[in-house]
Length: 437
Image (cartoon, rainbow, N blue to C red; front, side):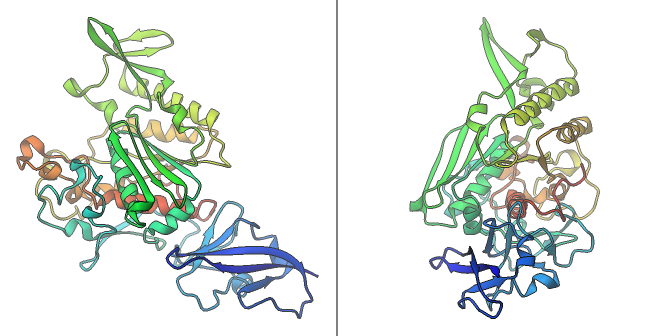
């Protein structure tokens, strides 16, 4: 009789991962493998993605069905769960889940007075001044002590070495505006602070391209400045004319190709007015157009992006995320001197709803699956987490107050905690990752 045997291979201390080695051998039903191996009966092997499984810690707490309990017994090891890849175990469930699906983006902020941030600002000298609030004189630390709790399931804490293991031999690209750069800085610091700095490479000299690399894990996390996700060109005709080409994808598109994880965003730059508006003319179908409704132009640009994704991404090799709008706090909701989150539903959005709906409809209509990283609502509460007057060392909020970006350590670390959870559980059918679409 042929059995599948799973063997635990402990890696060197500090690697925080226990891998599974699989082999199929002929054994009598009474035979037992060695102590570090488990024998799986033939009727259970079909439920496993052979070669797709590994044990790692920490992960979302899960329970297994009765038929799998003995097979997946943790042999006395604590804190070890199951990291599920596509084609792996299909019927594991999130513990304490009340519904068949868990919406990670529905929940509440919980104050943890004894909590420490996932890293210290001093551990990541490459962080920009714009997000280095403590370095710029912010006196309070309370905004670092709030933790996001999903309503229906328990989220794992971000584990840098575990994330690096998931990214082994892979590329992550994060493309978009300065809020995606904010997210890149957070993720780069979360990973950089998890391993010896001598085993990393960081390049932040170029404003349009930044990269974190891990030598031991052979992975990279790259940022590409592309606030429209399509091409913005300048034509010199006396004064430079700025042309936003609605049917032409960003000039960085060749750099994006082949990445294993892609995180995109756009939106804020489309609604800028006056001196902050970045274009003079639109180009569509070889025609230059001065007047076009923003919603119409944005829809055409999103169609260009979606077409590029559908043509250039293999879903079996690449996971695509689109991050939702990061909220600003303006007017009566300004972030100046705020030290606590907004604890009710009183937030009033200044961002045009039609732009948000165009993104959702575009994603729904694509051939390639795109995960909607819906951080908008959970971020709306966090008026306290902006740099405000501490985006620079000056302290005049009427001139320097920044209520758009986010301090680090801070809120973008939660965005990346959610990203970490979704990457870890890619392939799970009982985990809702495209919420409120």
